[in-house]
Structure formats: structure tokens, C-alpha cells
Image (cartoon, rainbow, N blue to C red):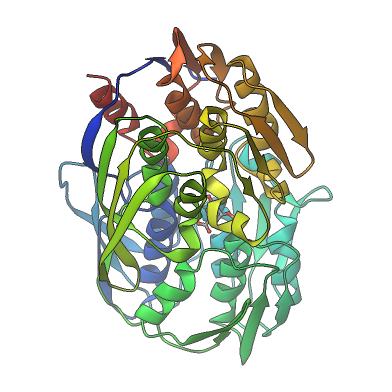
Length: 435
Ligand code: S3P
């Protein structure tokens, strides 16, 4: 456990205009796909968080030259990646994916097609997370993957092959990480590889592949890719991360008198469930798409007010999956009951986010009923300051820092170093609001 903590007190209604750092999902993909391209790609707006830097280090270990050309004042946000035409090099030792599930799962898809053996390791939290979900389809394609126990947890040993078989895979869960791992392997398999999901997950991999002139198609929830295509080297621009913006959006939406403008944020519909859910809760939010460069990018404006409880469930869940902790905080501040269902996946994130959220909300005086696949939260007129544990999970730490802005007395969030996995600079922004 780290000794870092946040101490937060209630803040009066704020007015802020901000930009958030680059999108985490898109940053990972930009480095991986550029590494396979047929020449150099410049990536701008890259998120220099611990998770994304794991991907940079992993690709370097696999022989990719990645230059950091400029520190644009927000860390290393511009990279030049020298694509290796689809061929990577055997690493000298194990690759440490740290806390990053996206690094481990997407990389497994890439490694399935490389004819050498490689070991992937992770921290304690990542080593508890299920990897059978990617091992099963990648084995069907011909890769050899060994992990620990029934759920094939890390460390993983992957032995790829240049003779991957295309598959038609029906995924039991809506997961962009599973879909992407199979699509990345499919790029090297002979023929057409398809993945069908129970509902549509984020589609950044498909969009970026298209942008880099690799053909993919989608019919309802089935995405297909044809093997043997070349990734064209083109420059990439990473928009701001709506999952990071979500913390400030909830803070503003639930605070009568507050005003927020977030610029240059990704507005991909498969990620905008947070805005839809808040609108149903009665929030006053406008979004404007300014440009579309593979991904829609624009501004979000929020005027604070009183929220009401709603149900968040079904096909909507994959579009809000990372925002559920902070949406649960919105539910605690709303009038009536907010029900979150069909969200069993939350149990296998960086922490068990259903029990983590339920426990912390209760500490703050909020009645919560927990279910296997979600929770029901009864809004309260006043949150109580408390000491809450992040459990090493960045999104829990940040969600409860937002709760602290509304609570009576002081809220202490313990173990907050994990925030750097996705949002370095979060605390600075938090203090700015409290000025
Ligand atoms: C991610 C997909 C989501 C999300 C994670 C990032 C990605 O996970 O929770 O933070 O970049 O593909 P699943 O696709 O496994 O649900």
C-alpha cells in the first residue's frame, strides 16, 4: 500500500474550463498498432500514465524504436514509433505489464502471431485478473498460452506462431480487450476472423485499424478482420479521455450553481454512456463534436443541478463500464434510488468495484444494497466525510475524491498512488477546483 492519500473537503460551486489528458485506451492502441505499421508514426496527445508507459516499454522490449520527441508541458505526450512491418523481436526477458490489463490482453493478441516465446507478468492486482478470456480464443487460433490455475492468471507464457488460424469467436462477455486481442491476432491469420459480443464494447481498435487503412467490418455485434493486411504508417492524434473527464462532469452535474467546460475530449458513442446516464438523471449537459479524425472529438459543457435516481443496465453497461464508480457517487447525491445491474464485469476490474464502491459509500452514510451483478444506491441529502480505501484501484480513489467534494467534514482517501496509472495530474486539478 502506498502512503499517498487525498484529503478532501466540501467545495462551493465551482466554475472551470479544462482539458483532460489523453485517452488511455486509445494511447495503448496507438503504440501497439504504430509498432506494427510499415513506417514511422508520430503520436500526439499520448497519455504518459503508468499503464500506457508499460505498453511503450513492452513494445521497446519487443524491438520497437520509440522516440520521445517533445515534452509538451504535460509529460511525454508526443512519441515517434518506428513501425516494424508486423515483425517483432523476441524480448530478452519477461515483460512486466504492471497494473495494466489492456497491455497484457492486447499484447497477448499481438504475441500470438509472433514465432517466439515470451513471458508476461503483472502486479498483484493484475495477477488476480482472469486471462482465460483471451487465452481461450488465442489457443483456438493456434497460439500456446500457459497461465496459472483455472482462470489462467499471470504470469503468462505465450508461444506464438506464424501460422495462425482464423476463427469465428463468440465471446461470452462484452469486452473490448477480448475483441481487440482476437482482432490483432486475426490481422496475421489466414482469412477472415470474426468476434461476436453480447453487446457492443468500445470500438477504438476497429476505428484505428480503419484509419491506418486496415479493413474491418461490423454487422451488429460482430466485427471481422481479414488477415495479411498492411498497417499504413499515419500520424495519430489521441483525444482527451472521457473516463478522466467523467470525474469532473459528475462533480459539476450534481452541484447546483457549478459550471464546467471540458475541451478536446473523445466523444466516441461506445464511451459516452456516462453522458446519457447523467442526462436521464436530469443533468444539464451539452456536447459538441468539433472534428472527427478516426475518433469524434469535441467539448462537453455542464451546468450543475439536482439529480434523480435512475436504472443503468443492459447494453448500456459496456459504454459506462469504467465510469460506474463515479456514477455510483452521482447516485448517492441524487434523489431516490439508482440501480446498477448487469455489471458483473466490475468484479474483475483493478479491484472488485461492486464491493469497493458499496463499502466506501456506506462509510459515507449511503444505504447500498449489493447484488452479484450490481447495486442499488439510495441517495442521501448529505454525504458524511469518512476514511475510504482505494484498494489500489485508480477509479475508486478518484470517484471518492469527488464524493469528498460534497461531504460534511473531511474525506480521506487512502493509497492514492494508483491514480497515476490513468490520470497523472488528477490531484492538481482537484486542488484547482477547491481554490
Ligand atoms: C479497455 C476495455 C475495458 C475497460 C478497460 C480498458 C480497453 O475493459 O474496462 O479499462 O482499453 O480495451 P473490458 O473490455 O475488458 O471490459
